[in-house]
Length: 338
Image (cartoon, rainbow, N blue to C red; front, side):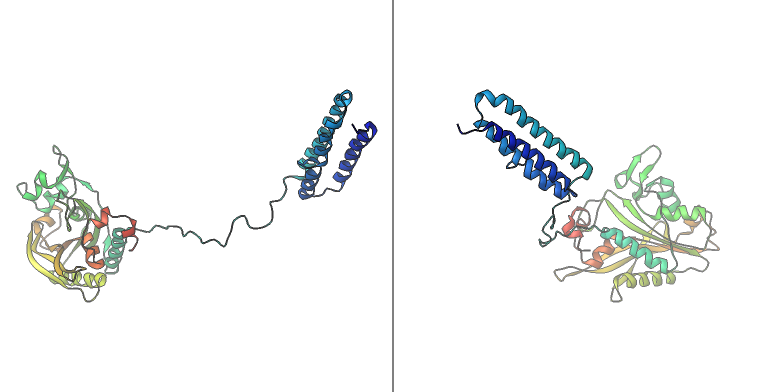
């Protein structure tokens, strides 16, 4: 075997000296990484000389095996010492990701169309001098029926037409936002000019224009000299402000226990197939004197009017939505268009 003991020793010393000399020139983590590859890499000088151990005769393998392990250990320790003093090498230059690839547009949410509508109509009435007020959705019969001049025998109070929570004390989910007008008048004296948007609950059969939960907008104006002319003017102005000047409305005589005289307000609904249909927007009328007396307001001095409109029907009329269920059961593909 062609092997020279002195030459092998000399090669080990040469690697030790060269590695020490190379460390003196290192100033950056990048310099250290270059040095590591040269001496400790898979094709480095230490790896190469250790591969020569197979040429060493058997009687010298143990001696030179120790020398090579010591060489590797010393070079590795020198590397670790310098590495700790310099820190991590800088990241490779160039883009981390391909910025030329098409981007993915984030899906940004927005307010539901019903919430948008409530805010819009509240703003319209705010400009007309109305204050926006709110009331509880869990009510009692006193506010939901009694103070609104709805007697015990009235069919509207039947347990099958309401969501009663407790029959013993008459606690229920409110069936109309008219409860808010009672709570306002209990705590204020005229002049009163308020609108109250909110959810109401009735066990109606669900179809294209009805739901067991929907939103109403209650309006109330009480002052001296208030008349039906004021009511019709206000409703007309609101409908034109929200639906546009071309909107068609009509008032039909009707009856409600808490207003007298009373009327239904209808809007002409245009369907996508070109057909038209009058859709009830809500009821209105002059506040019944019994209601004013129930909240300690003198009906001889003050008069007032009130209305209750369906907010879903406003959305359906304005945006040509043919079915109320789309507002509650649809996915974002429908809702994101508003």
